[in-house]
Length: 95
Picture 1: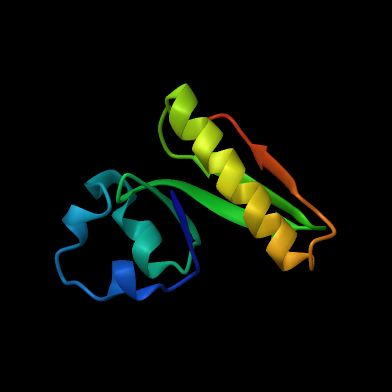
Picture 2: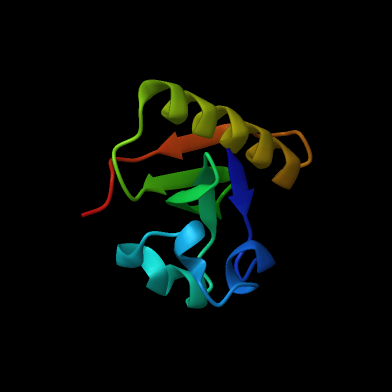
């Protein structure tokens, strides 16, 4: 699981983005949306507000994937808040 910033080269660096993002979500790659990779594919978006990282899956995640996303989200929240916060919220899938 990897949290990518907006406009990351992993997505923007390739003309054919199909290897990393599904056609249904391809618009996210040029919209400056922060995304979460699960097994090398875009599986969610993420935002941060008030030291809480909110992850919104683009599809159903397995329990193991959801746990891994939450774990990495807590690490990101801790980093962004200088270790003061480890809050993460994984919402229901979009759409």
